Image 1: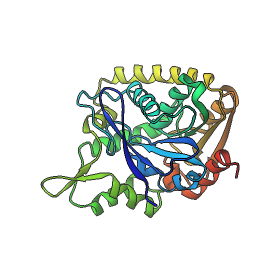
Image 2: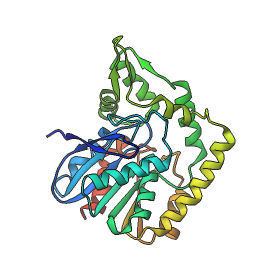
Image 3: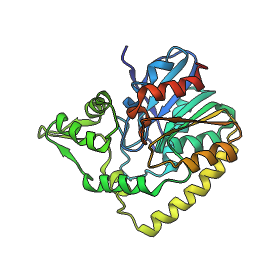
Image 4: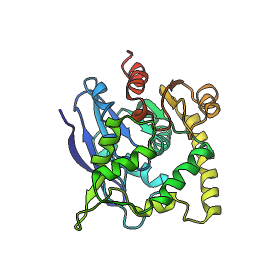
Length: 288
């Protein structure tokens, strides 16, 4: 069965879109990364839907959630949205699964709401980013800052170069769910161009550097406060999350952490090796 689309109020008066696969059991909230949307979890969500009340969020400025007319896309804004969504859905205790940007937001949420956390899965996200991946993403966004496509197939071709390790099925799904048709018949991304411009490095470089340094310190502090069982998932070929940082997170900082390294996967673990990702996370969430 396809997931159900629902809407819940976020912060700042925005309306947030979610996909819901099931309505019974302990809630599991899935949060995607930069440039993706809730359908990125389509391969994984059904694997836990019988045991968990499974929902996936479109972050603000992504997918079918509202764009912020004032361009408020800081971590604090996403965090406030997640808190509003959890409250709006009536979740008292839940597991949060977050990838990349969603993983960093999840760290904040888990640290601030220990009484609500039944478990946490951090997918290729860390307090410190590998510079190689940041350069790659910034260059890609800069080259396609306001991309417009003649067809879904053209976007699919573009994605195949941006996600070289992703399965053809994942690429096709991202293309189908990541676009909206314009009045002129062409297609544009379901993502706020104001957010893309920031990631492309159009803000002041010193401001960006200072903000990232503050974020790094804050996130290490957040990890030290997280007490719930936590699985850190790293793609073996990731250029965002280094092996040393992943080890430090689990061995030195998290109170109850474990590490799963998924082979044949880069940063986008769930699209590069869906089966390996499912096996690793289901072993944690379902005891399989």
